[in-house]
Length: 352
Image (cartoon, rainbow, N blue to C red):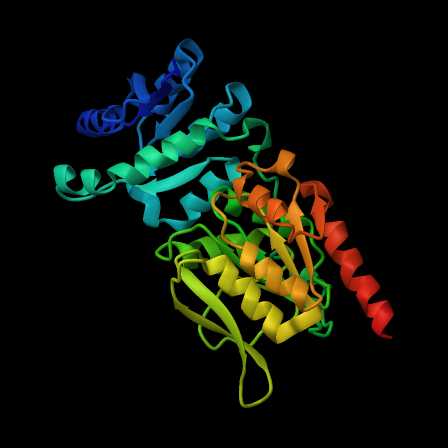
C-alpha cells in the first residue's frame, strides 16, 4: 500500500486552513497531519509531526512566512509550497524562492468557495510534486547587492554580442537560475534569455529584485527589445520567445502568447537565428518541453547543455532530453558558469 503524502497547513486564517485541508484531502493520496496559525507554531509542529510537505502563508503574526522559511531550511528542511495573498509582491516572491521554497501559488481572493476550488487541481499537483522533490538540492542563494557605482563598468561589460545563452526551466527554476547568474561573468560576449515558471503578474517586480543581486543587467523580456551583451532577459513560461532581425539588422525579441512548448519555441528560434553561436541550457523542471528545440540547436551546430540530474530539484525535464539523445554535455550546477565561459572562449579561438 502506497503511503499518503503527509501535509502540514500553516496559515493564520482558520477558514483558509479548513478550505485548503478539505481541498487537499479530496485526493486519496494526501493526508493533512496538522495545522498551525503562525510560523513559530509551524516550526514546532514540523519537528513533532514530520510532514512530507508544508503549505505556508506569508502574512502571519508572531513569525511571518519569510522568517519561517529561513528557520525551516536551517532547522528542519522540508519542501515548502507557499500559498499566499502576497503572490503579487515580487520582492516577497523573490525572497521566498531565493530561500528555497519549492513553489509559490496565489492564495484565492474573494469568494473562497469559488476561487480555491477552481485552483484545486493545481495545488494538489504541486503538493504531489513537492513530495518527491530532491530535498538535498533545495538551498538558499547567498547574494551580494550589485548597486555600487564602482562596479557599473565591470557589470555592463562592453564586449561584443557574439553568442546567445538560451535557458529553459520549469519548476524549481527561479532559484537555480539565480544561483547561475550570481556566478556567471557578465563580460561574456553574449546575451542571455531565460524562460522559466513564474507568473507574468509578478515578473516585473521579481526581475527588479533579481537585478539587484547578480552582476548581469536583468530585464523582463519585452516585445521588440534589441538584444544587448551582458543583459539577461527573463520571460514567464506562459509566454513564448522568438528572435528576429529588425530593419537595422539588429537581433530583437518577439514576445507572444503561450504555445504548447515554450522551451522548444525558444531553442528552435535561437538556433535558426544564431546557428552555431547559441548555447542551449536546460535546468531543473518537469515535462518533456525543450527536447525538440535542443534537436534544432544540434542540427545548427550549436551546443546543448543539461544540468546534472543529481543536482536538480526536479530531474524529469532533463531526463527526457538525455533519453532523446539531444544533450551534448551534462554538467553539475556548480560547474555550469565555468563550462559556459570555456565554450564561448574556445569557440572564439577557433573562429579567429
